[in-house]
Length: 69
Length: 366
Image (cartoon, rainbow over all chains, first blue to last red):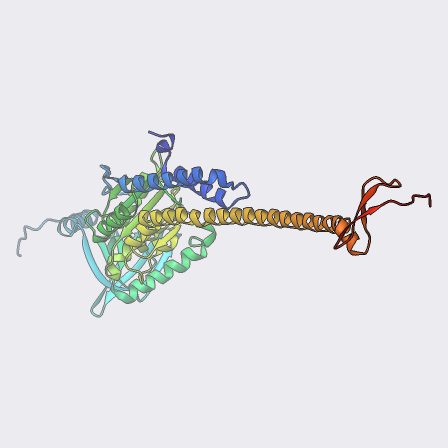
């Protein structure tokens, strides 16, 4: 499992945004673009997989609320 | 004289006996009528008459039991216990009052809205922003209500990974406000607080939704430590609970939409982000190619210029060399002499077109 897999969806999204911003920044270098692109693509795939896999944990609490105030 | 077997009471005992009988017969009675002579004494005690075309009965309650504003002329339903006072006056000890009929509901709503609004309970400055992506959510609703089912379906369709604790309460009827208040209190007293408290109920009649106009409930929502998201009824329905909430949802489904982003939309957006990188890279490659091409063209131009200069120089040298061509000199009428220049020696004289062999007759200094 890559380090990225341990990140939350929010963290991965933030990382993806940083990567995307790099492409529009003055730091952009053609030599590094392919590597960064692959990283962004991999993050996007992970985000999609995470989103599709996550399920909500919905529990009705046992507490009763019909006592007189 | 006729002898009777009936009991003889003291006045106090009679009143007590009557009250006992009334309490046994009518432990709780709901009566509908119009409010008249409404007044509050010492800020604590509420008195009014409940009347219709045929009669009138006095009512008593405390201000804390009065959960909705009422005024003369309003039609209400009181839940009360009949009682004979120590002064022999019959009255109703009221436990709860609720408006009856659309006109009264609306009037009550407007009165409470004006009162709470004046206190700043609905002010925009009080509104808190909900977390963009909550992880832990508290929900207060009836788990049997259609609105709750809609909420859960939309929530599951849109996002995952949430911990959702649901407080099952009544969402209509006389018990509803107190149950919802208890549920709000429950969530607000948890060791780990939910990040958002969602209070939802589907559509219904004005009377069904009137629970969400209860003064104590509205105040409790406004006072919640946990930011609140309230979605009650349909889009056109407005409750005071909505107004007191940090965020109002038009419906329970809309509450789910406000609460979490749509994962399919997020996936589409992420895909679009990746797609947007390609043109940027392609543009960088094209720019690089243009720069390389431009450099090569410049180098070619320089080379061609240098070659031209060399060619010119060569032509110039060639012209100079051509000027030294002996044939050209001969063509101008000069002659080329070969052999020893000494008297009696033969020499060869080359002219432009002829060769002459001659003998040297005389040689002298010029």
